[in-house]
Length: 166
Image (cartoon, rainbow, N blue to C red; front, side):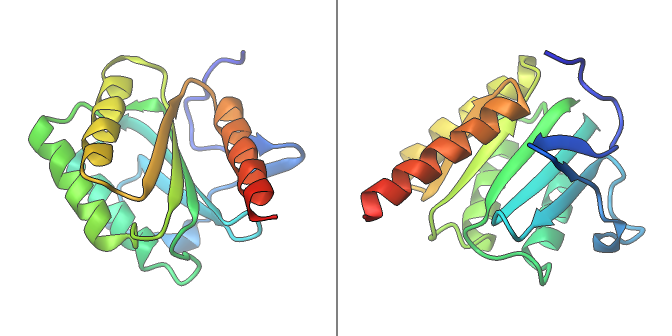
């Protein structure tokens, strides 16, 4: 396993494909520690977090993402928080859940892979998943310790989906 990178430099997300951060998506009011890149070819979004992530900043970035002309409802999302920390209260987690379900088109199934380095961020992600699942959301979310494992999960679930459609 490689050491986590401490910058927002391009990262290797799939064989031969660097995901770089396109600053055209951002304005000066965007938090510098949260970025996303839309990969239309793979119908996926890559979100990268570094440092401490405040709920208000996350909601600002998601608002920008969901209104981005490149974003399509139902896109899968890799949320890489391996260089960040989310230490939210239960009230914050529920506010985040409510925001997602109200604003992101989550009536359409989509998958979110959350990559963490463990600790409180992983705990909060798992708490969010349990809360969201208990309320019947279409969002399918899993927590992973590496981007590679997250991408393997996307590939496996895509293969299962293709098999069930045939």
